[in-house]
Length: 293
Image 1 (cartoon, rainbow, N blue to C red):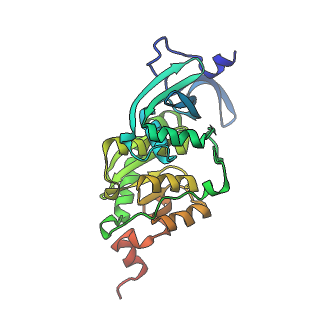
Image 2 (image 1 turned 90 degrees about the vertical axis):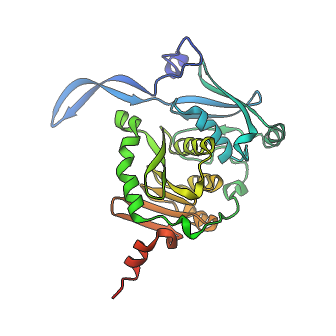
Image 3 (image 1 turned 180 degrees about the horizontal axis):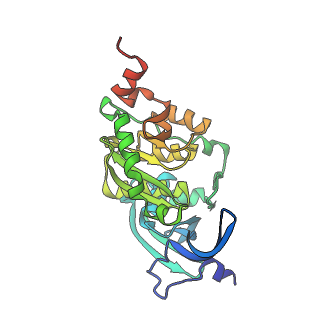
C-alpha cells in the first residue's frame, strides 16, 4: 500500500519519467452549488541524489528537468564547484521514487564523504542537512559587478509579462513555482518549474550551467518569496540580480547586501521594492528618486 501511495503509476521502462500531474475526482462548490468533476493536481516524487554510488539526499520534486535539478543542486550545495566535475548522470525510476545517479570527480567525492550530509527534503521550509550554525551563514565571496549589469524597470516588466507563457505546469495545476532567466532587455531565455521553490531555482541554475550562460548578462526571477537559501543559491551561481514575486526575509536581505546581489521583491508590472543594491536599477529609478526640476 505504501508503494502505491508514493508511485501508483510506475512505468515499465525505468528510464521513462512519471507525469508531472495526475487527474483526481473532486467536488467543486461554487455559489452554494456542488458538482462532481476532475482536477489536474501536481505530482511530487521522492528523488534520490546519488553520488558515486552513495545516496546523499532525498528531495521531493516534480519529475521534470531532473538533469538540471541534479546539477543545480550539486553546485548550489557546494558539492561541485563546476559543471565539468560532473562526469556522468543517469535518471532511473525505482519502486519508491526516482534515483539520479551521478559520477563526480574523485576529489569532490572525497570531500563529500567527509561532510556526510544527510538531507531530508520537503516542499516546505527548513534547514535541510545543515550540520552547524556556521553553515547557515555560508556565503561565497561578494560578486564582482559592473555598470553593465544594471537592470531596468522596463526589463523587469517585460519579464513579468512573459512569465505566464513559460509556466505550462502552473497553468495546468495552479501550484508550481517557477524560476526564470531573462536577458538585460527582459526577454526570458529559460524557465524551470517545480512543486518546490528551491527546486525550481536549482533547476534553473543547472540549466544555466549546462548552457554556459553568462550570469552578468541578465537576471533571475522567482515566483515565490526570497529566503536566505534562495540568495545563497543565487550567489553561488553568480547571479547578480534576484527578483521575487513575494517578499524576502531579513536574513536574505543582509546576505544579498553582503554578496553584492540586487534583491528585488513584490515585483508586479510597474512596481517593485528594492531591498539591496538599488543603485543598479538604472536611470529610470534614479530619475524617480531624484527628478529633474
